[in-house]
Amino acid sequence: MSMSTIQNMRAIPLRTQVWRHPAFQKGMKITLSLALFVIAWELTCRIFAIPEFALPSPSKTVATIIGKWDLYAKHSMVTFIETFAGFLMAVAFGVLCAAIIVVIPVLADIIMPLLLISQLVPKVAIAPILLIWFGYGMFPKIFIAFLIAFFPIVVNTASGLASVERSLLDLARSLEASRWQVFWKFRIPVALPEMFSGMKIAITLAVIGAIIGEFVGGSSGLGYLILLANSEVDTPMAFGALVLLSIGGIALYAMVELLERLVIPWNRGSTDVRLGMGG
Image (cartoon, rainbow, N blue to C red; front, top):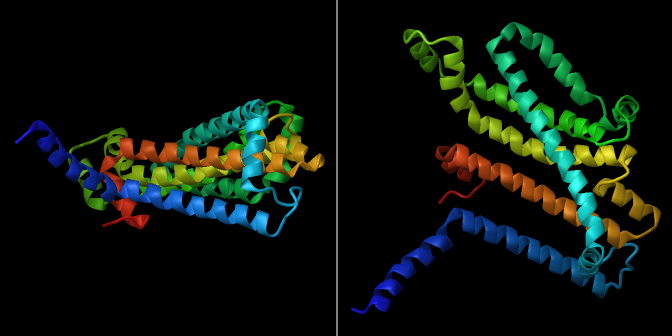
């Protein structure tokens, strides 16, 4: 048997495994659904002759992005720096707050009402106040992104930290583990799936928070670019900003999901089942 024949025999199962891999199938479904959406959008604009100022076609939107790429790149960088910085703040303070709630239950009744109030107050209403306090720089937008992304991380992480089985806690006490050892060795591993679920929600909310800040008092960023395009009735430019915002948001979400798979690979099966990817 020749070497090429052996290589072909080995390649066939590998291709089959790639086609059957849940991640590949998920990617194909997403790609196909997006392609069908774009085709339907393009055909609708062409068949009904919809004017560009009302609804630009995908081809016109892409042409606008290419033609004004330097402008889009500059403002995209600002928005996603604000988003990522606000998200990192939300993760740091959210996990800390959740740990305090679970480890020191007495403080839960004090912290939770404050967290609820921070979520019930409309962010659009407090954005002008933040501009007065912190000026028109990048920090107010980061802070708004933090406020919006903070809550799901606290709730999910606290739920995960509190879900440790009683038998595991009894085992830790029998081994004379300290409170820190119980938290780090028992509570954190159990809470990681819930923590990452909260992070995936938070990263999308952080994008919304950054855009709200730019709408209210921004001089740069994709939110500011959308307002500028609307004032000039340049709908293709506004849609270009929306497309880049969507692509960037998806990329940030995928980044968090990849980090989850790297940190807790043992949870991949349950995640796939929740997403309807189980075999």
